[in-house]
Image (cartoon, rainbow, N blue to C red; front, side, top):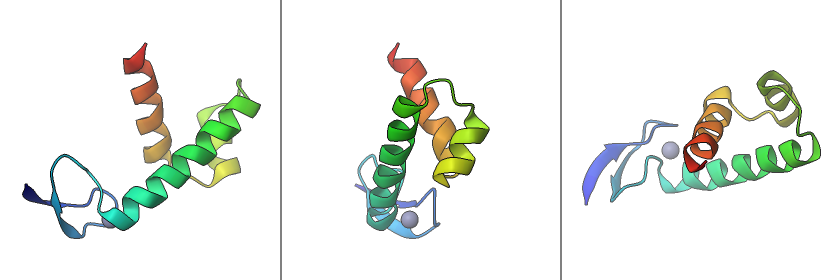
Length: 72
Ligand SMILES: [Zn+2]
């Protein structure tokens, strides 16, 4: 266990491997759910469309896309 600053809100919290504090981890999950839902309904949407339609931050969207690419 170590102390870390939340990547989203900057709060200091105790972490094992998480990048976000508990409150932000929950909204990150909620955001990624929104993005996944939007992309499955609109497979050809651009990042900017996803951003405008879901209201999720670009950083989160790019993060999700990177994870998807590395899973391939
Ligand atoms: Zn946070």
